[in-house]
Amino acid sequence: MKRKVYLLAAIALLAGCVYNSKVSTGAEQLQHHRFVLESVDGKALTQSKTPLELSFGQQTSIIHHLHVSGNMCNRFNGTGRVSDGALKVKELAMTRKLCTDPQLNELDQTLSTMLSEGAQIDLTESQLTLATAQHTLVYKLSDLVN
Image (cartoon, rainbow, N blue to C red; front, side):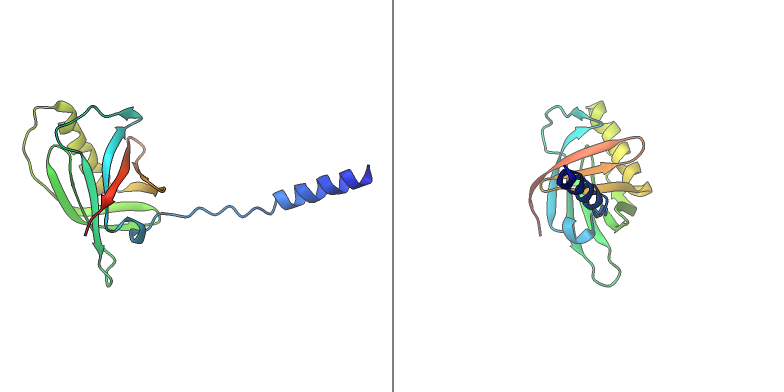
């Protein structure tokens, strides 16, 4: 009986020593990857003519900026920075055409706002999540880019 008590006490002691550290996604993990949008705010996307993508290019070594590009209704690109698990693209250039699909027009505005104001970014093996208090975009890894 005493052995069981000691064993339970040892397990409880070891359980309290578990290291719980949050590892944030950095620019190094994103560069040279292309992702395709799968869902917005928990809702799967309807099929579109072209995949809605987000790509990351080379990170500059001196100022640690990351090239970001992609498309929704419009094409966009800019240079951003990943800091403390958040992606922020201050200067985002975007074409300004009006699309026939109202969902794509809304997604253009949503993504533009998320990137310019900053969005939490989380990368698992094949899934990228951009999240703010208002929206969550989930992308699936598609392939590597240069």
